[in-house]
Length: 535
Image (cartoon, rainbow, N blue to C red; front, top):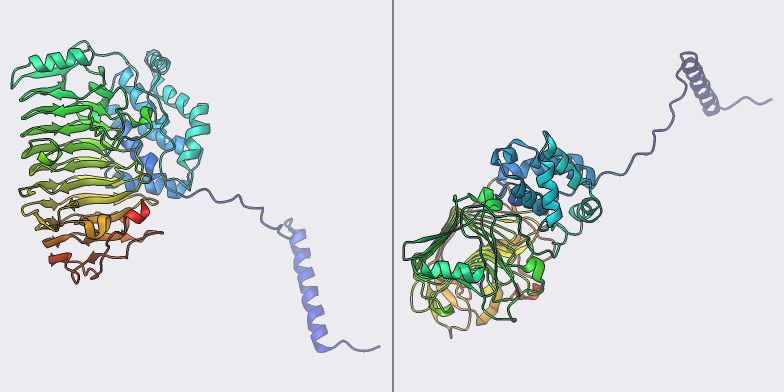
């Protein structure tokens, strides 16, 4: 009988030791541990940025601030994006202290609930349900839960919110506005009667819409010289659902310049909700802007401008575009472009300015898909407008730029003055799956290539992403602007996944398309024509 080798003896000793340990564990009632159970797949960790922004603008009547954005991001990163987490997040918004502090009436609550959760206008039965249900104590939470648990929300909306392939908040349902019951103080008639009331008002006079009044507009409503159109009680933008509302009633012929409302000289649009109509009219019409400020000295303030059918939510005109504006004021407005698109010709600016001396201040622009705020050249004059303290967010839809100075094209090589134009102290950021092709576009050589014109003298200073960031190819690009000042901008930039533009920041000095004081270590490279490749 042979003896085991030393290696075999050691192996047998180890087996004996393991058996003894197992026996002790059995005697102690434990036994060998079973393999760990199969773990469920990790939750979808995307952040539904478009949904977060829409709940803020439609429930609370304001663009999210950075603190609210960071809180929402943390919530979804921690808990994942599922129907249940989306329901809980929305429930917190609609039953929270901030919403309660708005002290909205039942019809207004119905409007904000359908707009935020279902991305559509309420139907009459839905409004009646909310109004009836709010008769009992604690009924509001039940109303919110009834929408959150509805088949429409759980089968159509929630899957779109958590769709990793699309940052937008689902498809906007093609539903036209309904009358939810106007207040008893102010105008409640049709367009013809409203136009007659405006025409009869003297300069310095005011026409007030009744709260929640809906006036359907089939051709541009004109606010005459010196007249103000407002809503009784001057509801703040946070109370947009209480505003009188002007809505586009039908689509104009393609490429027809048609607005919902036109402002004459020294006219004012204030505390009014204006809807461009793309949600229910469908196909965009490029020239159909929502609000057009044509006359000199006009003001658009404290209003909600939404749903652009054409190329801009608010267009401040000039002689080049059939207006006579040399000075204007645009302040404190909430402008959204949820139904516009970044591709295929469906894009829209938030605010487009061709008027020479326009003050554009304290506006919030969410999901404009062309440029958030753009300054155009002034033919035969100088663009001296000031754009400051605005907030531009690409949440669920991308844009070509957040802020831009655009000398346009076909100027036969002329240079157009932007001396005095200042784009300063604005706040901008994108969602985790959206982008600005260029954050600050100082000139538009990237759009039009060598057929574009050059500007001179524009200043971009102090603009910031704050504690957030933008996904972009170029945090800024100076390409088509000479003797410019670009400094003091603090822009945290993250790379885009796909781009046709050279990665920047960029300043096209060598070929003569950029000069001046340009901080930020830009690359000396041309972006000529890179953006149209994406269109």
